[in-house]
Length: 342
Image 1 (cartoon, rainbow, N blue to C red):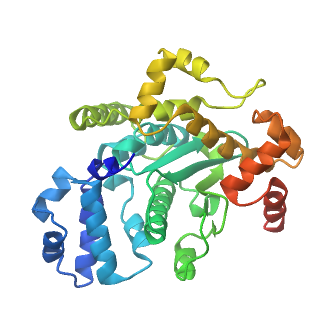
Image 2: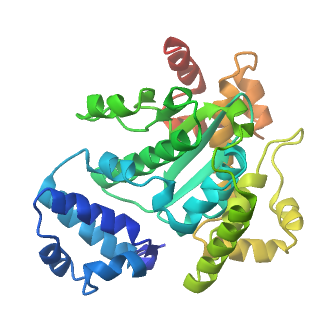
């Protein structure tokens, strides 16, 4: 992907909110923008957005000024669905949480292109798993994951009267120094986990949302599609559809050819679309296996070798090696940790 990511679009609400936090703490944000090489007046950034490269410069400058490890958490807390434009309105107008998550995955590239999400609603516990699509310094990795997961939790709890007690957040890094600060706002949070994700009981998916509005939803989806066309950002949609279709069946996962046929395109066309979106079928298949491995291992009635077979591994040892690469643990160690924390 080289430096292509630096040209990606970032919605203006993200840098503007970050600048507001900095200004509240006494930072000269106009001078900061000048040092970051951004000539666009601050008042226009909200409308025009910035490139990922510009956003990275602003973030690095603010981080250097504030040195506050809680910055990502605070930014995420200020980004509820109402701050996410047409995507946020589509989420709020959805009939239920399940539909809201489908739309979030479908249009995620409009609000978080540097990251990828995978929604999994199989089994009794559903999840939204987050991965970074670009390599980053450790503090940036932590910042992005905290911002994104906190924003998701804010949105989910705002739409569901059940409250945050039904949600659990995992982070794939060690507990930070500000862990107590996070726990005050996210009662169910765990660090040093195999992946970063928001987890929830799947029975919540059918619960009707308080702000559901079919007419508003149709309008919001059209706005999202119009924004895709205007910004030339239709990319990302094929990846989301493939991720959704990669589910294990009696004979394992669907092949590239089967997936292409279901999407109504030739295998060569599907490969080209995925390449244009910065990924490939093999990469998405491995991501699906990682996603489903943890869900299946959470079922104590399944032996590890049975899980390996369901994921398409002929040799259970290959599954163990892959799982260790994904999580830093063997399947046995993962199960032991999960059992000790129940």
